[in-house]
View 1 (cartoon, rainbow, N blue to C red):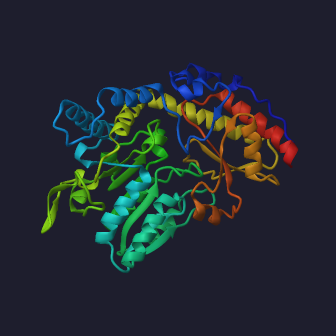
View 2 (cartoon, helix red, strand yellow):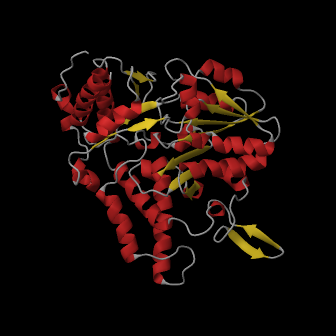
Length: 416
């Protein structure tokens, strides 16, 4: 086995970047030995987010858009203020922001409402092979109902989308292109500008799954050129159970409701019902109003950080990890495209990823293992056992990477 000196000295410049430390995150502060490297699954929450949600329950807890009392008014103001915060964070208009339970529900909303009303037999939906199941299965379901055809976009050997194949697949029957901003399994970042421009040339719409990218890259949907953008709160330092769908106003206005109930209507009678305009047309029932307050706090907190310094920090950590992996016999990173976020998917010689993960957990190092809800991707790569995924965030340190590399070396000596 190779020898690598797992030391932080070569990366000490990262200590001087103005980044939030573990003390800002209660779970990390109270578990000083924990190395949290499962950020692609969910991020830890800064204290300001926990405080914002708790304060709402303590001071303003009431249902929104319906109370005839001061608490109801206060809750509604907080809820709609959160919509404005989200809009500001991604450079959108508040009326383009629909609150959902997460990115998965947001994609289902688009597939069910837009897809169910616009797709017909023979229409084509192009999905990259990188996609999470949440950006595959909803389109398969709507295709079964409408007769539309799903066409996968193949990848190059390094995990990047094969643009030549993509352009060949595009045609007059292409109605939707759905693609991730950053692969949750490999960290590969597709060339969105090229993809969107090519889709535009055949008048196809584009949905971007930003669940992974939004925490690591600044997002400007006005400049992006897509038609839909989705993300989840819990992957961007916010609460669970809350997510966002952004859509172009003219498209949202033409989409039918996908759920019925309170607050998404203008008038109900047994003779018929008329519906509220977007975004409220898509927010049936009691929303996750406390979680929207927490999400707004998370986005305000993140927007106040030095995003460039964060990106540099995460890139340096990934490079430290990649360099260390080179010294571990039989270990390789899957997905080597140069356009990558801070996610590394590892495979091993004779060791099973699940066994390695268990050894790491015994050393308080939390990673993800399996197919990462990206079955078609793993099938295309011939990885029946899946991978061990290391995903980084702004609160990770070079010491975390040193501990991971040392633990991997010890583990592999036992297992291989």
